[in-house]
Image (cartoon, rainbow, N blue to C red; front, side, top):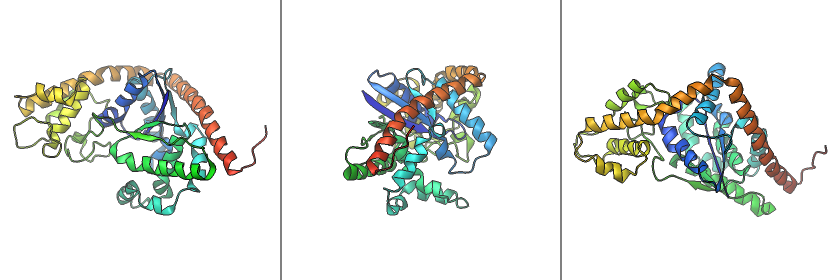
Length: 333
């Protein structure tokens, strides 16, 4: 049985890009009986950027409900809040002592985020990859589903794990990153050269999983394409059309090649309508289930508590193994 670990930040909305690039693949992995799946809401990572406390609370609980609504089954997978499992923070500190400053200085995401948040370049931004390494290593993950922008973080996680193992023996399992073939990176509908992001300054570029059907249709009809008339999957030369085909493939449960062939002869406007309608139908049951779940906060908090207890039990074993290897005096009782 393979252990699958992944996490998502509960800041703002869950975008269509989040769903297709991450959560839909989590659902597929959860469905495989040979996988042990552990999924976290990475709320400790979220506070590297200043959050309004009430919005942060509401968004976090909303995200948890939406993860369940779109298919994560708390009876099949462990689904929890990162901040509810103290071992994440403790292991992150220990791993800091086995991570070099030069390695952190080379992290491209730190450079990118520092440029975006010049008034708040905090240590959390720099130390983000070490906390991510702790997240992964605590659970002995075999595979970590990630987007292309997170591959560098997987590499530093592997480097840290190997460094520790070279010093102390077999402490950590060395994980592998996993990038799905379809939908790993969904782009903005208004700037198909950029990843779809909840921080996109143009709201027409982003689809929220909770957008109303008429809003979704309007955004797809306004999607940027090109001046050509040919429908073809060619990410380098036809970024907008290729993005629409990737979305359509996931929404209809087909391959990109299938939907590309089916859409031959369509006008761009017709393609946008088809994609919009398919996405509306894909998201419709999610919205209904989300409304049911978010109305029962006591149930959501119980599920989160149960998930944290299961996660903590696994994490404690790994943490104690590492602390013992280092030579810490164990606490009695």
